[in-house]
Image 1 (cartoon, rainbow, N blue to C red):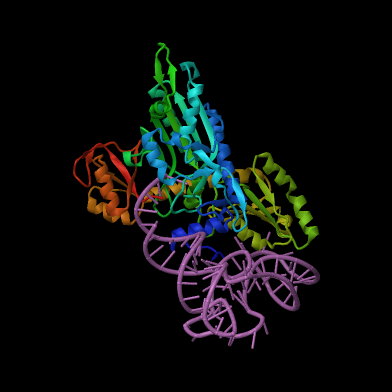
Image 2: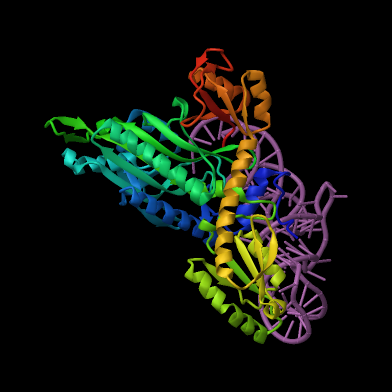
Length: 489
RNA sequence: CGGGGUGUAGCGCAGCCCGGUUAGCGCGCGUCGUUCGGGACGACGAGGUCGGAGGUUCGAAUCCUCUCACCCCGACCA
């Protein structure tokens, strides 16, 4: 059993691809680079959305929705922004088809758009163009808006969840009266992401600032949370940007301040995407299949009755009914799998593969003994438990699994984080993967040289890192603090 | 956009080099029966434009030309 899946040690990338497909999370569509997110995968995404949305609301944000299409001219209004996205935009040029005897339908050449439309790669431009009409006075600020949407970036090479041409995300776009407030907002949302990653995804993250070369096109400062996958590679799990007045200036968004003076507003934007699904999968899953933290599991407890016939099935249902009610009363999601077409062994393997956090098996022996068999997905341990107080025990078990997954991920990150001081040492260390803390002279040239030499990039300048100064490992020039180098997704 | 690879049943593959008549195998699927505490077994059965278009040939999954799609590795990117 379980040779359905490539082993992580044999081929990590292949393991990931196999897992996404075989655990029914997503599949490739007929459209190149675009995926179909299947119910099991989408259900996890919905849980993420739910938790994040509550956190956004709790920090004063509201949701809205802006158009999928952006007039081409808008994109051009902010110079570095257009430069950042121009190479990967899908463009709508026509608005009509006509039937054709040979090809079925063809684009109607008479239906060319006056101004071509860009399928949004991100929505700053259309949103700031709209905000112009909404902001007149400091009394209209701050504007704290989020949208859940799809965006399109025409990527050369795609991977399910990690990089697809179309993906789902949320993008927050806020407007503020002062620079300090906008920066505070960027930092607040970075904290929200970090909390979400650690408490829900059970992924430890490092909060940091991107270097100029990794910065969002159009931002003054880009903040990020960086996570480490099981193969030691880094994955950016969320970003938050302080946009300064760049978009306000480009779209002429001004307000009257308390001194009755006209001023451009200050902005932030922040987002996380379905890429988090990739992060979740690569952080916790194993050679037996998917592992999902209880807080995000579509169903937390799978109950497998072991029955020879319909009467036994019914007896088990009755036996388990009060426990089921207790579990549900505690807010635990439970599936009682009474499908008589599948054997128990098949179900065990299936629930394991799909990452159900807890599985409870009940057979005739259990009914005699007043027990059930409880298996936890994270450690694959099984134990027989008395049904007395089972609801409470399962509740604790789910909490324990959530916390164990986080601790395991944290332990892995710590094991693969190293401090180096010389470039030779660095080159050796980077081959083994993981995060490398090293001094950097702050120049793009050095960063680029390291990238050319080793394929590693600066993932971030950590916000909470060791601030002791030193000398750049490459040039020997003075450095304020160590930064994180890694190979990244 | 460069390099490599793959397209044959829902999925995974064999057959192709060396052309030959009803195109196979495993899994899955359907019916029936026996099973049911870690992916059960038997019997019977359904399911195919061999990616597409041209060509060579008496005859093409197989040979030739063109083409499309996808996957993997690089460059680019969340």
